[in-house]
Image (cartoon, rainbow, N blue to C red):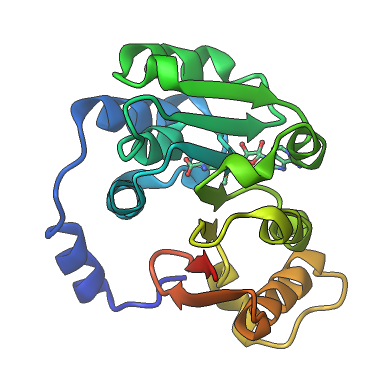
Length: 214
Ligand SMILES: C[S@@+](CC[C@H](N)C(=O)[O-])C[C@H]1O[C@@H](n2cnc3c(N)ncnc32)[C@H](O)[C@@H]1O
């Protein structure tokens, strides 16, 4: 589902700063070699992640849901020179692809891959160290990821969460058994009422929450 008309989508697609060739190749190869390439952030969304990271100038970024590493490389563009991005994914089958592109990038020494269940990996990290968070993994854990982060994140820390409009399903009555939609609805409602943060949903692609810890 798109929230914009086809005409507006196409206009937006024709009016953004083009991404680097390395990212174009990674997107192409992800579409050739993976079964769910639509999970990748892609050109337009990547050009949102990159400037947000450049504005924040994070020392440390935590990404939950790496997939083929497209968003990892976009977020890395804003890292401080001695900064680091830690990216978590439970799927190791795509590491051959991820590593090829990370190693070809200028951020190869600034990316740390953590393979495992995100909740368990997060328990091993000091979440207070991170300035920027990107939640883009299993929807059923969005509230768990958020609560872990918001409790310990430092004031001013920024959190982005992808797919919060869930193809428009958050607008309709939840079908019985649709746990992901139910959790995303609760996630959006909780955040809007959470006095620990200020936030809004950007109606970009599948909806991205932009959250700042007070
Ligand atoms: C939407 S994709 C991430 C896309 C990537 N951030 C991008 O924009 O290119 C979601 C990823 O989360 C991973 N994932 C889902 N549940 C997870 C969990 N519980 N722990 C760790 N990774 C998980 C999946 O393996 C998948 O690669």
